[in-house]
Length: 524
Image 1 (cartoon, rainbow, N blue to C red):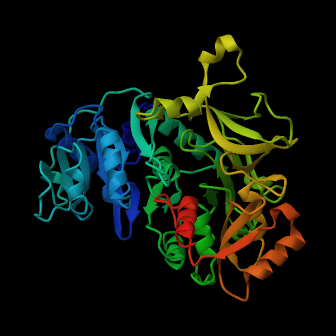
Image 2 (cartoon, rainbow, N blue to C red; image 1 turned 30 degrees about the vertical axis):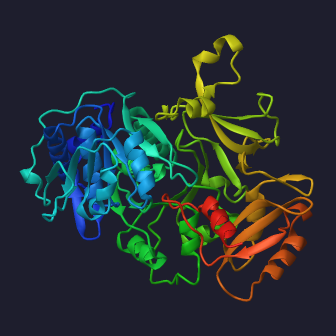
């Protein structure tokens, strides 16, 4: 079966390997056929409650096998999935529910109890509760205790085409309210195929599901598993030693992470990496969610000696844009590589022309993975999803591309290098400075675990401030400044160093730069 909508991916798995384990969480497992049966039961319950094709369904659950069953149930019902991260604020959840016109919510009793007052401020009419305990005070409710055989299984697959909306991903919304990015079934299916292709995934792979599903690449791990008919091991990351134990015990072969996870993994205060952990079976490591400091790349190479490391760059509006092939890591570890298959990446200057080699410009994405735009936000959509600037004026209507807002440069060999966010560039000491340049310099200092560089207004000039998280030892702000003066150009030397015990993270697990600044200003 050629997949056109997401349920077709699972149907193909059930035709080929129905009894193979597709999901594992601690000591629990699900086969492809069991996942299908449970998802069709959830779909039947939703349809029986009055859900119709195209309805938006909010799923408020922690990452678990039940969450996977719920999201596949939404797809099998022909509805549109909206994953709502339970750790968002009440105001953000209310905004998402109202903005997305959600009338039906699926969740666990634990999470729904905490949101009871939220529902009164929204138009939620129907609630499907997992693991019900009898306390059903949310209004129109259908509850079940995990007995999937009691659910009304649907008889036929939903109809639809690839360009139908599959789900809406809401960004973390660290400033203001989150934006909903509309993803089609085609986006999902193409994305799974493309990533599986260039990372060389296999049917016998055991993939580590550490990243949250509300983060687009975490979600992609699940679809990669369906595409390859492999196995996904779910793990909620808290402490790195537990992570290492799972990698060893489950004989994980594919491990996707991002810099905050790597930073914890290599923090000697938190982790004791010993020979008791067998990590030799890990053959593919992928990274997303921001540029990886070279020091961490080298530590990954040293720890996962048999793994090929794929450094990747993307944005939720177009999922995945570039990757650096593992063969190039030794020569150019700072690079974000070249375009992924079936995608083209342009570097455009302020005049709308393609940049010359080593000229900085905005990364423009064109190709198969461009999403449909922002839900309920035509103004922001028109700002980011724009005509291809290289087409003639009379043909601008023929193609839409994504303006990333990221400044990059391309070298003579065509490899791309991330410079920084267009709206985060700092003008200081007569130079335009990218925070990533400063952070890369500081990451070379032994004892610095993570760092964030920002600009601030000084008495006579714009200045540089760095926030650092240290792993101990005798490192001090004075020693940090001394290192920077000795090893970097004067305009990258911070004017101020602030030491933090830990960095706040967004709901997607990225460093929350805006919250760092807000908390710092609140205590000035």
